[in-house]
Image (cartoon, rainbow over all chains, first blue to last red; front, side, top):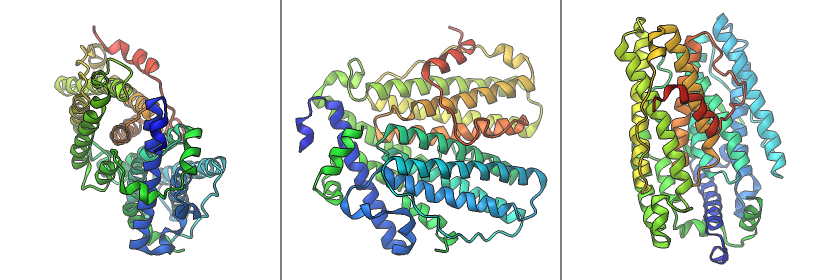
Length: 208
Length: 233
C-alpha cells in the first residue's frame, strides 16, 4: 500500500484512520439503507456514497439533518403554549440549533460538498408534557449521535466544531431533563450511537 | 490533513474492500459504538487499546512508555491530564459531601451523584493509561478548605466553575487525540461534564449555555493555571 512508502510513521496513522473513517460511513449508511429503506436514509447520504469517497461531508450532512430536526422541533414548541421558563428554554435552545444549522451548512460548502436539504418533519407534541418528553429524547439522541460520529471525522477543524456543538447539545439535554424532573446526567459515560440507531430513533419524525 | 484526504479520495480501491481487510482498531470501535451501553463500551475500548499497544511495541518498545515521540505518547499525556482533572473533581465532591455544608437534600444528592460519576471517570482513565502502557498521573494533593468553609453558595459556584472548565478542557483536547477509541472515550466523558456544568449553572440561576451556541475550548496551560489554587503541592 501507499502507506508503506511514507517516511513519517505518524502520517501513516492518519492515512489509515482516514481510510477507515470512509469505510465506516459506507457501512453505516448501507446498513441504515437496508433496514430503513433508501428514502429514510436519503437525507443522510450523498451521491459520493458509491464512489467510496465518503468522509467529513457526509458526517457533517448527517449532523446538519439532526440540527434541522431540532430547530424545527423547537420552532413548533413556540406554538404549544408552554409555561414561562420552559418557553424561554425552548426559544434559547431553538436559536442555538438554528445557529448549528447555519454553521454546518457553511462547513459542508467549505468542504466542497452540497448541504443536505431540510426534510419535512412531524412532531407528535401537543402540550408541555409531550414537548418535554420528546425534547429529552431528541437532545439525548443528538449527544449520542455526535459522540458516535465524531471519532470518524478526518479534519481537525471539523472535529473541533463538532465537539463545540455536542457540548451544547449535552447542556441542552441536562437542562431539559431538569425541566422534566429527570436526572440531568444519568450515566457516567454518554453512550455513542451509530447512524442506524440514530435513524431508528428519529425516523418516526421524518415525513419526507 | 488536506493532503491526506486527497490521497484517500484518489484511491481506486472501494471503501468496502478497504473495510474487509481493515487491520486497525476501527472495527473494534464500531463494535463498541454498536454495543449495549457505555459500561460495555469501556471494556471494549480497553481491549482495543490493549491490542493497539501490542502493535505499537513491535515498531518501538519505547513508544509504549511514552518516553519517546511514539504514536500514543500524545494521547497518554492528554489522558493523564484528564485524569488529573477528574481526580480534582472527585476529591472536591467527596469533601463537599463529607463537610455536610450543603443542607438542601436534592442538591446534596446531586453532588453525591456527580462525585460518583467523577470517580468512575478516574477509574476509567486510569485503566486507559495502563492499557496504553503508561504510568497513571498521581492523585494531586488538593486544598478545597477555603471553598468548603465558604458555605453552600461558594461550593456550588466553585463546582459550576470547575465543571464548566472541565468541559472546556476536554473540548480543547478532542482534536488532538489520535486514537479513535480514546477520542470516543473522551467524548463520552466530555458530554457528561457538560451536563454537570449545565445542571450547576441552572441551579445557580445562570444560563445553561453561557458560551451561546458554540462551546469554547480551553487549552492545557489555561486550565492548569485555573485549577492551581486548588492544588496543594
